[in-house]
Amino acid sequence: MGLNPKRTVAELKELRALTSDENGAQRVAWTDTWLRAREWFTSKLNDLPVERNVDAAGNSWVTLQGASEKSMLIGGHLDSVPNGGWLDGSLNELAGLEVLRRIASEFQGCPPITVRLVDWADEEGARFGRSLLGSSAFAGTHSIAADRSRTDRDGVKLEDALRRCGVEIERFPEAQNEQRNSGAYLELHIEQGPVLERLGLPLGVVLGTKGVERHTITFLGQEAHSGSTPMNARRDALAAAAKLAL
Image 1 (cartoon, rainbow, N blue to C red):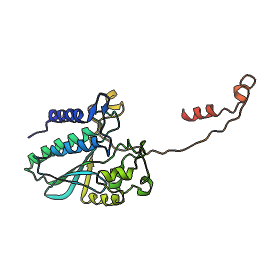
Image 2: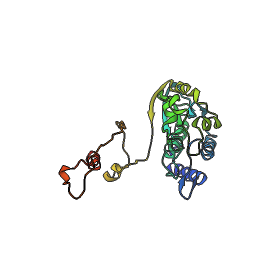
Image 3: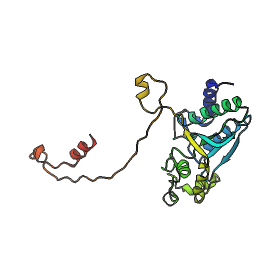
Image 4: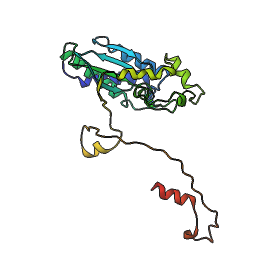
């Protein structure tokens, strides 16, 4: 059995019909719609020789056991921002599912290495303002103290929303156990910039990533009469801020 891209597109449309409205995808993490999406995805695994488990941070793992314990991880996420695009995140997951089907078929259910498909929990961070929540727990970079008290706009605590979904924030460090035997990580994603489109290329391979820093800067100016003070004699805070932005 070869890869069937048409099936993937059909399943993406099925997921869109189940979890979207006229404004876009509504699969915000830790909501009923997100849980419905996960339940739907699990139903697609019935004919595959795989095991599924949810780790201590809520990340969902699908494992196709191979002859070697060494594993290749394929990553994605089903959660979305409010009114999100129908492909963002879910393309990774549904394409990964099709790859699992292909590998399971070619190797009669036992490939040379173990292949694991992960659905990261709350990758978007749309509800509580903390993106990469589950994946940072897996990586060991999550701070329980910093996130325990986060609330959404309705005043619901992150800790309580997780508990409603069967996840205890105190157990997040246990998610690092899933690193065991990991050898490589791949993530297919739609391009969210204009580069490939401008170059007319269908695919690009990421060789590096960009670090982000945030700083708070205060510009202090001086009041002056706008009619009698020439521009070169003013201390205009907005003009200085504009130069920095440029």
